[in-house]
Length: 322
Image 1: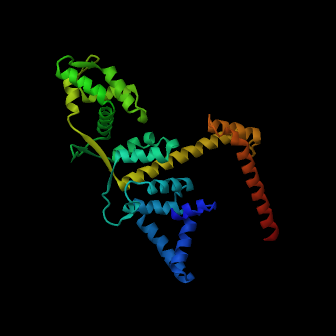
Image 2: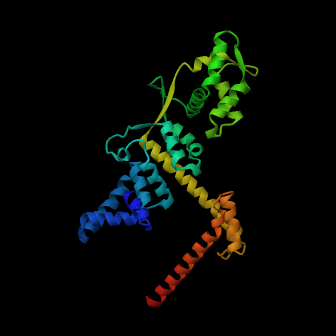
């Protein structure tokens, strides 16, 4: 992370992780024989223990050892996550049992602040909740299904974000003015409170049926009000959060690769591996949508063209002199 930051500030290309690994070993051990011996032992150790610890297995993948080498973009995103944890990232790599917990809200805040274009709050919701520990009035709940966790989560957010309307409903219930409420009214408020997670009406109606007493299209308020006497909080182990985040990045970038491949195949209609400016412009328009940076498309094309020419000249140079 320090190396990447320094090279970014200097305007230089960042090192790949395997390059950085070799540089680190050279700086640490100095002598070529010792470097070679320790590097070999390190690689053998990584292979041996990667099956026992997901952190070591991730380290193996980032280095490109064995199968499933990971894209540089995923490593970069993973490092950004580490740098912005609400707990010191050194806690992720402690040798002792790692039981450090972070709140669900802290996870989502990190996603929204650092990965705004990834929609990670939606992509990671089920993954994070599945690994979450749920506390009811500060007491850990055991053997709770992911479906129940989601119900508790969406209802807790409804209570937090709709306190004014909830207080009005509660006051009407206590003064015997009202004993029920239309399910659609409550459902709309739950959807609005959880709009960041793309909850739909069908999901919310199912949630209401699972947790409250309904008569026709009305929710009986005594069962509804009683639910919110208890307070629920959601926390996840730091190591689980990092693992689930990595898996989300893997899905996102693999899907992006497939999407870009489809875009390329549509543009490269001659199937010769080359597209011209007009085709390039069409592809970029699709990818960028209504972006304010559309005016840069010609600059992007020139950049890739110059890079291609430089690469071609470099190959010719190597061919002639070697």
